Amino acid sequence: MPAPRVDTDEAILSSFLSDAAHVPGGFAAGVAFPDSEAEVASLIANATRVLPIGAQSSLTGGATPRGEIVLSTRALSTISSPAGDSVRVGAGVPLKELQRTLAAVGLYYPPVPTFDGAFVGGTIATNAAGAATFKHGSTRRWVNAATIVLASGDVLDVTRGETFASAEGWFEIESTTAALRRVPVPTYSMPAVAKLSAGYYAAREMDLIDLFIGAEGTLGVVIEATLKVVARPRRVAALIRCTDDRQAIALTASLRREAQAAWRGQGPLDVAAIEYMDARALRAVPDEAFGRAGITRPAAKSVMLLLQIEISGDDEQALGRLQSVLTSTGIEDDPHLALPGDDRGAERLFNLRESVPSSVNAIVAAAKQAHPDVEKTAGDMVVPFERLPESIELYRSTLERHGLDYAIWGHVSDGNLHPNVVPRTFDDVRRGREAILEIARAVVAMGGAPLAEHGVGRSALKQQLLKELYGSEGIDQMRAVKRALDPEWKLAPGVLFAP
Ligand SMILES: Cc1cc2nc3c(=O)[nH]c(=O)nc-3n(C[C@H](O)[C@H](O)[C@H](O)COP(=O)(O)OP(=O)(O)OC[C@H]3O[C@@H](n4cnc5c(N)ncnc54)[C@H](O)[C@@H]3O)c2cc1C
Image (cartoon, rainbow, N blue to C red):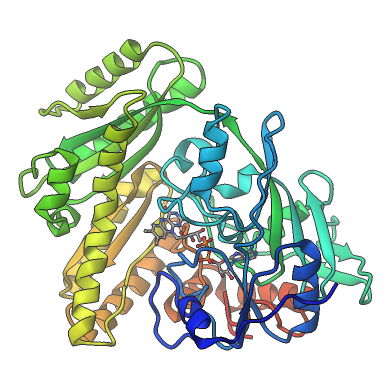
């Protein structure tokens, strides 16, 4: 099969030179849109540097090219008819489209990140997680099989449960084009947290498929996957105002207990997700966004939680239980509810949640106009849930000690929050990076991780955080995996760690 055409037209290339991290200076040798396994294999076999991309919604610069041929997966867009509890999907299918197809037959794919324009391949490559990871886990748990093109152009079909590392800690991969490859499994211990997107997965006698999930395109290009799906749940969204952090944390802890009881079949309140927006984050949101959601801006110190509740039995029972939990936690206002079937109401509440990052990003963009070096400076921290109060205190005290304006939001039911610096000058960015590094060290000491869901990419700060997590020895072990599968450093070079 000949390789697909590589487009070098500047006008076409220009729309692929940046991802959502908006790091300047992206450049590419060309862009190709292969539409079959053979085309992807042929392109990779004949190229010297390739960067696979999905929707380029990466927040790490990992999908910003640095001179490679950009392999856009968007033409790998098939969705087969769902069979039982699984569906075979091309890497270039946006999650929104997958959900639409599944919804038509009453099915649902749970581990979606907040941005549902992300492609299936990109979410596998970053082990993406989202609000409902609390109930459903991150992407890893939902990938049953994947077809992956290696740097040699060989095609690997991996099915979960079929291939495990040897007891001595190796995989052996037999290739049609090269000698037997021995891939060493790293020996570092991964932190026990609800979500993690921090380089290569490693565990004793691990499943081969887990090596590629979360590898951010550095070990192979995912071209198709078989994903697990479930029956589409009936869902209630509830927006709740808390007077302060203490109340929000207490309510989150109670709701988590209620949810865990529901999963054991011992209660009606099946909470799948709890999202947190602190007072500073709400302050960044313009009045119009509250207006569109039909919500009055809350009092200055208020914190808001947005819940997703899955209803399998009686609505009344679940809502009754919610009300009694709210009352016992001292919540004064009635929650804003979008009941099952009220998709527009739910969307209005989710849009309000989404206006938090977009409003902060708009402030960063405005500052960048005056100071071009200003960039988004944020943490993606996850801690074991029992350390949550301490971690929020840590984020606030560290950012304040560095004299920074900031906002905090995120997936509080997982202990995963995003402390964001709100920079006005490059000096804020510089001090912000120092603060994030300091926070990361303390989070690692708490048994958490500074790389929960967005990955590492080509961000110098995030690569430093990866080193904080596993040490230089851990990074060297990752390099050994990369060398075994991609000795010429062809795929996504410089993503995760320097060559
Ligand atoms: C507003 C907003 C909200 C977000 N919310 C979340 C969230 O809640 N949770 C979360 O986890 N993330 C979130 N993200 C980050 C981003 O959406 C995820 O990282 C997503 O998984 C990236 O998918 P993508 O298709 O855009 O991949 P890209 O950004 O194109 O690529 C990401 C990385 O994966 C590699 N890659 C892409 N496709 C493939 C492939 N087929 N095979 C091998 N490697 C590949 C790329 O080389 C790159 O290193 C958010 C981003 C935005 C902009």
